[in-house]
Length: 126
Image 1: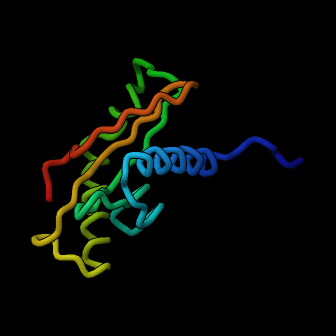
Image 2: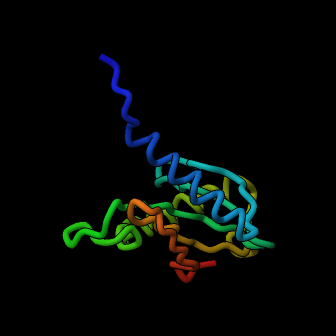
């Protein structure tokens, strides 16, 4: 029997697409989606002016005390993986970390009404 319910990957892609559309409405330009390397994964890579923006998208159906909010799910360890993956992407694409403007953002999507919060510059890097 084939399940008609979406799997976690499909659900994640739907929220990443929702986040990308939200950011496009706020004048960011898409560059890449779902970049993956040994160091980690980056959900969205976009550009805002001259600044490259590496974005983690998180969704929670509801804030639960034992799981925390969507934004709280991006803990220190996840931030370090995001940073390493971003540095790898920059190097692979010919950017110099020292001469490139970049930042790390979180798009947190919460609840059944899909409340979106955008946290900019979550790491003081770049």
